[in-house]
Image (cartoon, rainbow, N blue to C red; front, side, top):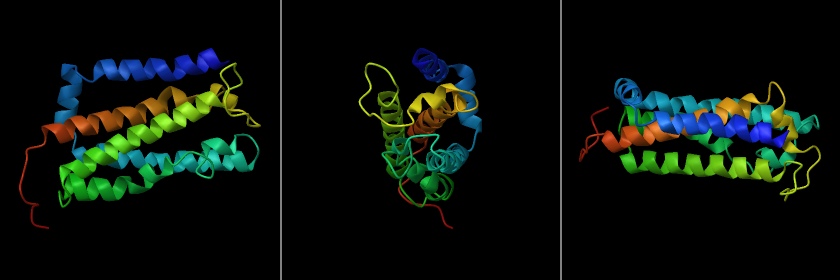
Length: 174
């Protein structure tokens, strides 16, 4: 079961990283309003609520919820204000958006590492009941197989957009 889970998460992540420097991706990032990549991160609120509900029902370990070691919901909750203030209005400097994206990637990595370390394998560091093996079953396989790589790609794309953003010394008028 865990090898399938690793493949489900690693394959889309690798494909996404390989696509990042392509002409099609560069064009997509050039024509997509930067705030949209940030606003899309708000989907993480719903995912965290679903994980929490599964934990309350005893179908997921508390470890992977905001009551455990998963603070991913903070990225979802701050996506709209960061997208609005940094990307759309440009009232906050670009470094705030960059720091938010880096924090989002680190928080995502934290969640993935904790979920991996709670799998029933010889590398198990967190003995939780239930384990995170539920992530290898349908429909939960969509979380490591699509949503985690998607969140990572949104952060990477947003960082590329911020790096290409022209430097301005003042914020535009409201």
